[in-house]
Amino acid sequence: MLNFASDYIAGAHPAILKKLEETNMELLPGYGTDHYTAQAKEKIKNACHCQDADVYFLVGGTQTNSTIIGAMLADYEGVVSADTGHINAHEAGAVEYTGHKVLTIPGHDGKIDAKELKDYIAGFYGDDNYTHMVFPGMVYISYPTEYGTIYSKDEMEQIHAICKQYDIPLFVDGARLGYGLASKESDLTLETLAANCDVFYIGGTKVGALFGEAVVFTHANAPKHFYTMTKQHGAMLAKGWLTGLQYDVLFTDDLYMQVSRHAIEMAEKLKEILKKHGMNFYLESPTNQQFVIIEDEKARQLEKHVVTSFWEKYDETHTVIRFATAWSTTEENLEALNQVLAQL
Image (cartoon, rainbow, N blue to C red; front, side):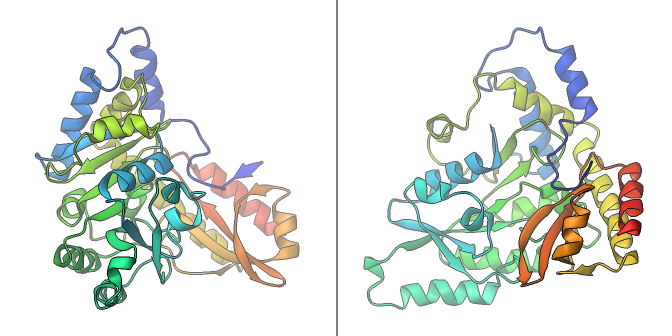
């Protein structure tokens, strides 16, 4: 059975497994106090050209989102997100579970608009009753978005400028960050991203690691005792070296961006295959996630041979499904898909 359901369906990049096997019997201190974790932090700082960054390793994306948001917001504050944002749509209320409301504004192919963001915050403070309301205490965006779209450097700078104007942090969910940066349409780098937000994370779970996310507070601006709060939120591993070691490998010889570029190359080929077989695209995505509108009967035939992700109903007889490539996608996978689609 072919599987294009997501980008974390395979285990880990062989280089990571090799390093884990080589170091398996090393006796190392826990909770990220080992030398592999220290090396990984320095490599990430260098890659971001941000030597005063605070770097932490957490176990997964949902834990990372809820821990960062819970740690950075005051009790009376919420986080502004696109209505389609991951924290609003697909995290089972994890942010609300921390006691903070997700404050939604419209998403446009997954992205928030800078002018609409400014209007929302200005409208809040323009209400004489704002002290009785949930304060916008943070802005959340993801790169890429839930729909595989990306912000330009100019868009990021505009959103960041609004956040600075109102003295609230900008948080970038980077669960698929590598695939966004590797996109042929991206004009962002790790360096320019670090310069235009207050905190972001470099996704590992979906980009070649077994698990784990690397959180980067860009200018020594981590909340007080964030390490302790990470444990409080259940986002810390006792065997912390397992995460640090993986990032040490991913940030050696540019492996993180190599595997990300591979996924984008596979996505471009995937798009050509889907177009060749008459698939209608729901939107234009320059990253590893591709969304197509398919007749329900054709979808039932497809699912006998290929696993994809249900995204949303398009109308009574059509559904939007997602195909995702990853670091692990091969030319053989794509050719096999081509053969299946030819038979539908």
